[in-house]
Image (cartoon, rainbow, N blue to C red):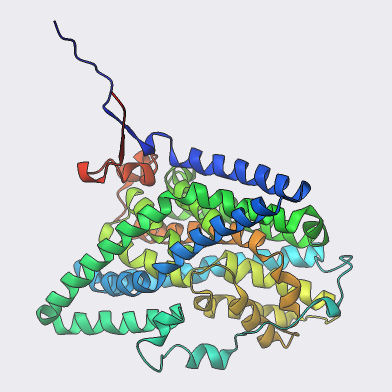
Length: 442
Protein backbone atom coordinates (compact mmCIF):
# COMPACT_ATOMS: atom_id res chain seq x y z
CA UNK A 1 0.00 0.00 0.00
CA UNK A 2 1.40 3.35 -0.99
CA UNK A 3 0.64 6.70 0.52
CA UNK A 4 0.87 10.12 -1.03
CA UNK A 5 2.96 12.69 0.75
CA UNK A 6 1.13 16.04 0.54
CA UNK A 7 4.31 17.94 1.35
CA UNK A 8 5.81 19.93 -1.53
CA UNK A 9 8.83 18.41 -3.30
CA UNK A 10 10.74 21.66 -3.24
CA UNK A 11 11.26 24.68 -1.06
CA UNK A 12 10.79 28.05 -2.71
CA UNK A 13 13.23 30.78 -1.75
CA UNK A 14 10.37 33.29 -1.73
CA UNK A 15 8.53 31.46 1.06
CA UNK A 16 9.83 34.05 3.51
CA UNK A 17 8.13 37.37 2.62
CA UNK A 18 10.46 39.82 0.92
CA UNK A 19 9.76 42.55 3.48
CA UNK A 20 10.78 40.15 6.26
CA UNK A 21 14.01 39.37 4.42
CA UNK A 22 14.81 43.08 4.16
CA UNK A 23 14.04 43.70 7.84
CA UNK A 24 16.24 40.76 8.80
CA UNK A 25 19.01 42.23 6.65
CA UNK A 26 18.63 45.60 8.36
CA UNK A 27 18.91 44.05 11.84
CA UNK A 28 21.88 41.87 10.90
CA UNK A 29 23.57 44.83 9.19
CA UNK A 30 23.29 47.00 12.30
CA UNK A 31 24.59 44.22 14.55
CA UNK A 32 27.51 43.30 12.27
CA UNK A 33 28.38 46.96 11.68
CA UNK A 34 28.41 47.65 15.41
CA UNK A 35 30.53 44.52 16.00
CA UNK A 36 33.03 45.49 13.29
CA UNK A 37 33.42 48.99 14.71
CA UNK A 38 33.43 48.21 18.44
CA UNK A 39 35.79 45.23 18.13
CA UNK A 40 37.87 46.74 15.29
CA UNK A 41 37.38 43.67 13.07
CA UNK A 42 38.98 44.72 9.79
CA UNK A 43 37.98 41.69 7.74
CA UNK A 44 34.31 42.12 8.70
CA UNK A 45 34.50 45.83 7.88
CA UNK A 46 35.97 45.03 4.47
CA UNK A 47 33.44 42.27 3.80
CA UNK A 48 30.48 44.50 4.57
CA UNK A 49 31.91 47.15 2.27
CA UNK A 50 32.39 44.66 -0.57
CA UNK A 51 28.93 43.11 -0.22
CA UNK A 52 27.21 46.49 -0.27
CA UNK A 53 29.38 47.80 -3.12
CA UNK A 54 28.75 44.74 -5.31
CA UNK A 55 24.99 45.04 -4.80
CA UNK A 56 24.99 48.72 -5.82
CA UNK A 57 27.28 47.95 -8.76
CA UNK A 58 24.88 45.26 -9.98
CA UNK A 59 22.03 47.76 -9.83
CA UNK A 60 24.06 50.36 -11.71
CA UNK A 61 25.06 47.80 -14.33
CA UNK A 62 21.53 47.75 -15.73
CA UNK A 63 20.80 51.46 -15.31
CA UNK A 64 21.92 52.81 -18.70
CA UNK A 65 20.17 50.28 -20.99
CA UNK A 66 17.19 50.02 -18.65
CA UNK A 67 16.56 53.77 -18.69
CA UNK A 68 16.97 53.98 -22.48
CA UNK A 69 14.61 51.15 -23.37
CA UNK A 70 12.13 51.95 -20.57
CA UNK A 71 11.75 55.55 -21.74
CA UNK A 72 11.62 54.57 -25.43
CA UNK A 73 9.00 51.87 -24.88
CA UNK A 74 7.01 54.01 -22.44
CA UNK A 75 6.68 56.85 -24.95
CA UNK A 76 5.56 54.50 -27.72
CA UNK A 77 3.09 52.85 -25.32
CA UNK A 78 1.29 56.17 -25.04
CA UNK A 79 -0.16 55.51 -28.49
CA UNK A 80 -2.33 52.85 -26.82
CA UNK A 81 -3.73 55.34 -24.30
CA UNK A 82 -6.58 57.76 -24.92
CA UNK A 83 -5.71 61.41 -24.21
CA UNK A 84 -1.99 60.57 -23.99
CA UNK A 85 -0.92 64.21 -24.18
CA UNK A 86 -3.36 65.12 -21.43
CA UNK A 87 -2.09 62.31 -19.19
CA UNK A 88 1.55 63.31 -19.78
CA UNK A 89 0.87 66.97 -18.99
CA UNK A 90 -1.16 66.12 -15.89
CA UNK A 91 1.61 63.82 -14.69
CA UNK A 92 4.17 66.61 -15.05
CA UNK A 93 1.81 69.03 -13.31
CA UNK A 94 1.46 66.78 -10.25
CA UNK A 95 5.20 66.20 -10.21
CA UNK A 96 5.61 69.96 -9.92
CA UNK A 97 2.84 70.41 -7.32
CA UNK A 98 4.22 67.78 -4.96
CA UNK A 99 7.77 69.10 -5.45
CA UNK A 100 6.64 72.59 -4.43
CA UNK A 101 4.95 71.20 -1.32
CA UNK A 102 8.07 69.18 -0.45
CA UNK A 103 10.48 72.09 -0.86
CA UNK A 104 8.18 74.32 1.22
CA UNK A 105 8.28 71.75 4.03
CA UNK A 106 12.08 71.55 3.78
CA UNK A 107 12.45 75.32 3.97
CA UNK A 108 10.04 75.58 6.90
CA UNK A 109 11.86 72.93 8.91
CA UNK A 110 15.24 74.51 8.15
CA UNK A 111 14.09 77.98 9.22
CA UNK A 112 12.60 76.62 12.44
CA UNK A 113 15.49 74.37 13.53
CA UNK A 114 18.60 76.23 12.21
CA UNK A 115 20.46 72.97 11.39
CA UNK A 116 23.83 74.69 10.89
CA UNK A 117 23.91 76.31 14.32
CA UNK A 118 25.94 74.76 17.14
CA UNK A 119 27.48 71.96 15.05
CA UNK A 120 31.09 72.95 15.71
CA UNK A 121 31.73 72.75 11.96
CA UNK A 122 33.56 75.58 10.18
CA UNK A 123 34.13 76.47 6.51
CA UNK A 124 37.58 74.84 6.83
CA UNK A 125 35.90 71.47 7.32
CA UNK A 126 34.45 71.57 3.80
CA UNK A 127 36.01 71.14 0.41
CA UNK A 128 34.74 71.69 -3.10
CA UNK A 129 33.46 68.60 -4.95
CA UNK A 130 35.33 67.25 -7.96
CA UNK A 131 32.25 67.72 -10.12
CA UNK A 132 29.52 70.30 -9.83
CA UNK A 133 26.34 71.36 -11.54
CA UNK A 134 25.36 74.70 -13.04
CA UNK A 135 22.49 75.87 -15.20
CA UNK A 136 24.78 76.10 -18.23
CA UNK A 137 26.06 72.57 -17.62
CA UNK A 138 22.52 71.37 -17.01
CA UNK A 139 21.08 72.87 -20.20
CA UNK A 140 24.00 72.15 -22.51
CA UNK A 141 24.63 68.76 -20.94
CA UNK A 142 21.24 67.40 -22.00
CA UNK A 143 22.41 66.91 -25.60
CA UNK A 144 25.20 64.31 -25.91
CA UNK A 145 28.20 64.74 -28.20
CA UNK A 146 27.96 61.10 -29.28
CA UNK A 147 25.74 58.08 -28.60
CA UNK A 148 28.34 56.00 -26.73
CA UNK A 149 29.68 58.29 -24.00
CA UNK A 150 26.36 58.72 -22.09
CA UNK A 151 26.26 54.94 -21.61
CA UNK A 152 29.91 54.53 -20.63
CA UNK A 153 29.86 57.52 -18.26
CA UNK A 154 26.32 56.79 -17.05
CA UNK A 155 24.94 60.24 -17.89
CA UNK A 156 21.28 59.41 -17.29
CA UNK A 157 20.00 62.82 -18.37
CA UNK A 158 21.55 62.40 -21.83
CA UNK A 159 20.28 58.82 -22.03
CA UNK A 160 16.76 60.06 -21.29
CA UNK A 161 17.13 62.69 -24.02
CA UNK A 162 18.20 60.11 -26.62
CA UNK A 163 15.47 57.69 -25.59
CA UNK A 164 12.82 60.42 -25.79
CA UNK A 165 13.98 61.41 -29.28
CA UNK A 166 13.98 57.77 -30.40
CA UNK A 167 10.54 57.18 -28.90
CA UNK A 168 8.99 60.23 -30.56
CA UNK A 169 10.61 59.28 -33.87
CA UNK A 170 9.18 55.78 -33.58
CA UNK A 171 5.72 57.21 -33.00
CA UNK A 172 6.06 59.35 -36.13
CA UNK A 173 7.24 56.40 -38.24
CA UNK A 174 4.27 54.28 -37.25
CA UNK A 175 4.28 50.74 -38.71
CA UNK A 176 7.78 51.14 -40.14
CA UNK A 177 9.16 51.28 -36.59
CA UNK A 178 7.34 48.14 -35.44
CA UNK A 179 10.40 45.81 -35.75
CA UNK A 180 12.48 48.20 -33.64
CA UNK A 181 9.75 48.44 -31.02
CA UNK A 182 9.43 44.64 -30.87
CA UNK A 183 13.15 44.30 -30.26
CA UNK A 184 13.10 47.14 -27.71
CA UNK A 185 10.25 45.55 -25.76
CA UNK A 186 12.07 42.20 -25.76
CA UNK A 187 15.31 43.80 -24.54
CA UNK A 188 13.41 45.67 -21.82
CA UNK A 189 11.82 42.42 -20.64
CA UNK A 190 15.26 40.80 -20.57
CA UNK A 191 16.76 43.65 -18.55
CA UNK A 192 13.87 43.65 -16.09
CA UNK A 193 14.17 39.89 -15.66
CA UNK A 194 17.88 40.21 -14.89
CA UNK A 195 17.24 43.12 -12.53
CA UNK A 196 14.66 41.06 -10.64
CA UNK A 197 17.45 38.61 -9.84
CA UNK A 198 19.53 41.48 -8.48
CA UNK A 199 16.56 42.73 -6.47
CA UNK A 200 16.29 39.28 -4.92
CA UNK A 201 19.78 39.90 -3.50
CA UNK A 202 18.57 43.03 -1.69
CA UNK A 203 18.53 41.36 1.76
CA UNK A 204 22.25 40.56 1.37
CA UNK A 205 22.89 44.02 -0.03
CA UNK A 206 21.09 45.46 3.00
CA UNK A 207 23.45 43.69 5.38
CA UNK A 208 26.46 45.11 3.57
CA UNK A 209 25.18 48.65 3.05
CA UNK A 210 23.76 49.19 6.54
CA UNK A 211 26.58 47.30 8.22
CA UNK A 212 29.27 49.32 6.46
CA UNK A 213 27.47 52.59 7.24
CA UNK A 214 27.45 51.76 10.95
CA UNK A 215 31.02 50.44 10.93
CA UNK A 216 32.42 53.36 8.95
CA UNK A 217 30.51 56.32 10.36
CA UNK A 218 29.43 55.17 13.79
CA UNK A 219 27.29 57.40 15.93
CA UNK A 220 29.93 60.08 16.58
CA UNK A 221 29.67 61.51 13.07
CA UNK A 222 25.90 61.51 13.20
CA UNK A 223 26.11 63.48 16.44
CA UNK A 224 27.73 66.44 14.65
CA UNK A 225 24.92 66.44 12.10
CA UNK A 226 22.16 65.46 14.50
CA UNK A 227 19.83 68.38 13.76
CA UNK A 228 20.40 68.24 10.01
CA UNK A 229 19.94 64.45 9.89
CA UNK A 230 16.76 64.70 11.96
CA UNK A 231 15.50 67.51 9.72
CA UNK A 232 15.95 65.44 6.57
CA UNK A 233 14.24 62.40 8.08
CA UNK A 234 11.40 64.43 9.60
CA UNK A 235 10.88 66.39 6.38
CA UNK A 236 10.78 63.25 4.27
CA UNK A 237 8.51 61.55 6.79
CA UNK A 238 6.08 64.48 6.69
CA UNK A 239 5.87 64.21 2.91
CA UNK A 240 5.80 60.41 2.85
CA UNK A 241 3.34 59.84 5.69
CA UNK A 242 1.53 63.18 5.69
CA UNK A 243 1.36 64.93 2.32
CA UNK A 244 1.01 61.86 0.12
CA UNK A 245 -1.76 60.20 2.19
CA UNK A 246 -3.59 63.53 2.39
CA UNK A 247 -3.46 63.98 -1.39
CA UNK A 248 -4.58 60.41 -1.95
CA UNK A 249 -7.51 60.81 0.43
CA UNK A 250 -8.68 64.25 -0.74
CA UNK A 251 -7.71 64.39 -4.42
CA UNK A 252 -7.68 60.74 -5.54
CA UNK A 253 -10.31 59.78 -2.95
CA UNK A 254 -8.72 56.43 -2.12
CA UNK A 255 -7.70 54.80 1.16
CA UNK A 256 -4.13 55.91 2.04
CA UNK A 257 -3.55 52.84 4.20
CA UNK A 258 -4.15 50.65 1.17
CA UNK A 259 -1.50 52.66 -0.68
CA UNK A 260 1.15 51.72 1.86
CA UNK A 261 0.06 48.07 1.78
CA UNK A 262 0.61 47.98 -1.95
CA UNK A 263 3.57 50.36 -2.31
CA UNK A 264 5.65 49.32 0.69
CA UNK A 265 7.87 46.78 -1.16
CA UNK A 266 9.09 49.52 -3.53
CA UNK A 267 9.53 52.07 -0.72
CA UNK A 268 11.44 49.51 1.34
CA UNK A 269 13.74 48.53 -1.53
CA UNK A 270 14.38 52.19 -2.34
CA UNK A 271 15.44 52.82 1.26
CA UNK A 272 18.02 50.03 1.03
CA UNK A 273 19.28 50.44 -2.55
CA UNK A 274 19.29 54.28 -2.62
CA UNK A 275 18.44 54.10 -6.33
CA UNK A 276 15.16 55.14 -7.91
CA UNK A 277 16.16 53.59 -11.24
CA UNK A 278 17.29 50.36 -9.58
CA UNK A 279 13.93 50.14 -7.84
CA UNK A 280 11.99 50.98 -11.03
CA UNK A 281 10.82 47.41 -11.90
CA UNK A 282 9.29 47.03 -8.43
CA UNK A 283 7.89 50.57 -8.55
CA UNK A 284 6.15 49.89 -11.86
CA UNK A 285 4.84 46.55 -10.62
CA UNK A 286 3.26 48.00 -7.48
CA UNK A 287 1.87 50.96 -9.45
CA UNK A 288 0.09 48.58 -11.80
CA UNK A 289 -1.13 46.42 -8.90
CA UNK A 290 -2.59 49.55 -7.31
CA UNK A 291 -4.87 49.94 -10.32
CA UNK A 292 -2.96 52.27 -12.66
CA UNK A 293 -3.35 51.07 -16.29
CA UNK A 294 -0.22 49.28 -17.49
CA UNK A 295 0.16 51.45 -20.61
CA UNK A 296 0.11 54.63 -18.54
CA UNK A 297 2.22 53.21 -15.69
CA UNK A 298 4.90 52.14 -18.19
CA UNK A 299 5.24 55.82 -19.11
CA UNK A 300 4.73 57.54 -15.75
CA UNK A 301 7.06 55.36 -13.65
CA UNK A 302 10.21 55.54 -15.86
CA UNK A 303 9.51 59.25 -16.35
CA UNK A 304 9.24 59.70 -12.60
CA UNK A 305 12.28 57.54 -11.80
CA UNK A 306 14.46 60.01 -13.72
CA UNK A 307 12.75 63.31 -12.89
CA UNK A 308 10.53 62.98 -9.79
CA UNK A 309 12.71 63.48 -6.69
CA UNK A 310 10.86 65.03 -3.76
CA UNK A 311 13.45 63.75 -1.30
CA UNK A 312 16.70 64.39 -3.21
CA UNK A 313 15.65 67.43 -5.24
CA UNK A 314 13.25 69.30 -2.94
CA UNK A 315 13.54 68.60 0.79
CA UNK A 316 17.28 67.88 0.86
CA UNK A 317 18.66 70.84 -1.15
CA UNK A 318 16.38 73.24 0.74
CA UNK A 319 17.69 72.06 4.10
CA UNK A 320 21.27 71.74 2.82
CA UNK A 321 21.28 75.31 1.48
CA UNK A 322 20.17 76.66 4.87
CA UNK A 323 22.68 74.43 6.69
CA UNK A 324 25.62 75.52 4.50
CA UNK A 325 24.59 79.20 4.57
CA UNK A 326 24.63 79.12 8.37
CA UNK A 327 28.04 77.40 8.49
CA UNK A 328 29.53 80.01 6.13
CA UNK A 329 27.71 82.93 7.77
CA UNK A 330 25.63 83.87 4.71
CA UNK A 331 22.19 85.38 5.24
CA UNK A 332 19.49 84.12 2.88
CA UNK A 333 16.59 86.34 1.88
CA UNK A 334 13.11 85.72 0.51
CA UNK A 335 14.41 85.79 -3.06
CA UNK A 336 16.89 83.05 -2.19
CA UNK A 337 14.14 80.80 -0.85
CA UNK A 338 12.14 81.40 -4.03
CA UNK A 339 15.22 80.42 -6.06
CA UNK A 340 15.52 77.20 -4.07
CA UNK A 341 11.90 76.38 -4.90
CA UNK A 342 12.49 77.16 -8.57
CA UNK A 343 15.59 74.97 -8.76
CA UNK A 344 13.78 72.11 -7.01
CA UNK A 345 10.92 72.10 -9.52
CA UNK A 346 12.89 72.71 -12.72
CA UNK A 347 16.22 71.04 -12.01
CA UNK A 348 15.14 67.77 -10.39
CA UNK A 349 16.06 65.82 -13.53
CA UNK A 350 19.70 66.50 -12.64
CA UNK A 351 19.48 63.91 -9.83
CA UNK A 352 19.07 61.24 -12.52
CA UNK A 353 17.61 58.57 -10.23
CA UNK A 354 20.99 57.40 -8.99
CA UNK A 355 22.39 57.21 -5.49
CA UNK A 356 23.29 60.58 -4.06
CA UNK A 357 22.17 64.12 -4.91
CA UNK A 358 25.48 65.97 -5.31
CA UNK A 359 24.66 67.41 -8.74
CA UNK A 360 21.35 68.79 -7.53
CA UNK A 361 22.99 70.24 -4.41
CA UNK A 362 25.77 71.94 -6.36
CA UNK A 363 23.20 73.27 -8.83
CA UNK A 364 21.26 74.81 -5.93
CA UNK A 365 24.37 76.26 -4.27
CA UNK A 366 25.72 77.76 -7.49
CA UNK A 367 22.34 79.36 -8.20
CA UNK A 368 22.32 80.94 -4.74
CA UNK A 369 26.00 81.93 -4.90
CA UNK A 370 26.88 79.79 -1.88
CA UNK A 371 30.37 78.23 -1.58
CA UNK A 372 30.57 74.80 -3.20
CA UNK A 373 32.97 73.81 -0.43
CA UNK A 374 29.82 73.32 1.62
CA UNK A 375 29.14 70.12 -0.30
CA UNK A 376 32.17 68.57 1.36
CA UNK A 377 30.55 69.10 4.75
CA UNK A 378 27.68 66.80 3.79
CA UNK A 379 29.41 64.07 1.82
CA UNK A 380 30.35 61.98 4.84
CA UNK A 381 26.78 61.81 6.11
CA UNK A 382 25.17 61.53 2.66
CA UNK A 383 24.62 57.73 2.48
CA UNK A 384 22.61 57.80 5.70
CA UNK A 385 20.47 60.67 4.43
CA UNK A 386 20.10 59.18 0.96
CA UNK A 387 18.17 56.16 2.22
CA UNK A 388 15.23 58.21 3.44
CA UNK A 389 15.42 60.62 0.51
CA UNK A 390 15.18 57.81 -2.04
CA UNK A 391 12.29 56.13 -0.23
CA UNK A 392 10.42 59.45 -0.45
CA UNK A 393 11.33 59.81 -4.12
CA UNK A 394 9.90 56.41 -5.02
CA UNK A 395 6.72 56.92 -3.01
CA UNK A 396 6.11 60.16 -4.93
CA UNK A 397 6.71 58.34 -8.21
CA UNK A 398 3.80 56.05 -7.33
CA UNK A 399 1.50 58.70 -5.86
CA UNK A 400 1.52 61.01 -8.89
CA UNK A 401 0.22 58.44 -11.43
CA UNK A 402 -2.32 57.26 -8.86
CA UNK A 403 -3.69 60.79 -8.53
CA UNK A 404 -3.74 61.35 -12.28
CA UNK A 405 -5.43 57.99 -12.91
CA UNK A 406 -8.06 58.69 -10.27
CA UNK A 407 -8.84 62.16 -11.60
CA UNK A 408 -9.02 60.87 -15.19
CA UNK A 409 -11.30 57.99 -14.11
CA UNK A 410 -8.96 55.30 -15.40
CA UNK A 411 -7.92 53.94 -11.98
CA UNK A 412 -9.05 50.38 -11.27
CA UNK A 413 -10.33 51.00 -7.77
CA UNK A 414 -11.12 47.33 -7.17
CA UNK A 415 -7.48 46.46 -7.90
CA UNK A 416 -6.35 49.32 -5.64
CA UNK A 417 -8.49 48.10 -2.74
CA UNK A 418 -7.22 44.53 -3.06
CA UNK A 419 -3.50 45.22 -3.58
CA UNK A 420 -1.54 44.07 -0.57
CA UNK A 421 0.83 41.23 -1.42
CA UNK A 422 4.45 41.92 -2.28
CA UNK A 423 5.06 42.03 -6.05
CA UNK A 424 8.57 40.74 -5.41
CA UNK A 425 7.08 37.59 -3.90
CA UNK A 426 4.30 37.33 -6.48
CA UNK A 427 6.69 37.76 -9.41
CA UNK A 428 7.82 34.17 -8.83
CA UNK A 429 4.25 32.91 -8.66
CA UNK A 430 2.89 34.41 -11.87
CA UNK A 431 4.17 31.67 -14.20
CA UNK A 432 5.64 28.22 -13.49
CA UNK A 433 8.93 29.08 -15.17
CA UNK A 434 9.39 31.99 -12.75
CA UNK A 435 9.43 29.70 -9.72
CA UNK A 436 12.79 29.29 -8.01
CA UNK A 437 13.08 25.96 -6.23
CA UNK A 438 15.73 24.26 -4.20
CA UNK A 439 15.53 20.44 -4.34
CA UNK A 440 14.90 18.69 -1.05
CA UNK A 441 16.74 15.44 -0.41
CA UNK A 442 14.55 12.36 -0.34
